[in-house]
Image 1: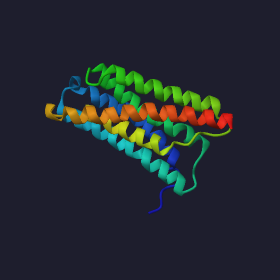
Image 2: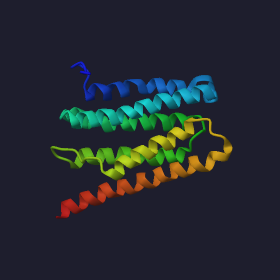
Image 3: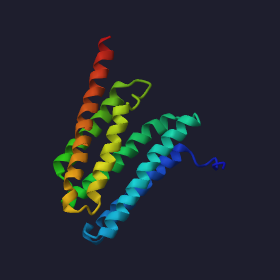
Image 4: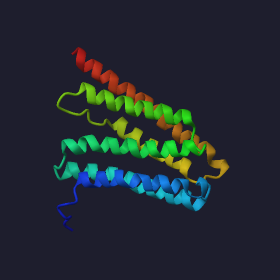
Length: 182
């Protein structure tokens, strides 16, 4: 099946950004306490997260990597995870300290990457991709109406995401410093 020429990896990324507010809206429906809306919100965020995989793979395979896409894709990732965490924290369903920690790292490393890279972008490492995956699912599990006996799983998963968030941030800084010194 041939994809119409106006549909590009960048248009998919822009679509992801455009639909984030709809996911946030659904998160707040009925005060955020309705299991049906929680599942619907999770579904919206999950589908939006899948577009991150699709647009990146498509851009690489079709040799359609652009400077705009290289910039927009991580921005869309941060907007997606950030909007979910902030919304859940406002509803007291997700700890604010985790939201602040993750967003500080994400925004800090994004600014760092923009400032230190001249004429290019630091590509995401395997650890960075795993970090994004665990953040997405970790936060997503806080959207869902989990039974209390599964709380250990939700906490364990987000704990792994926190560890990866900190360690990959450190890795970016360490690798930059080593390259600079070489």
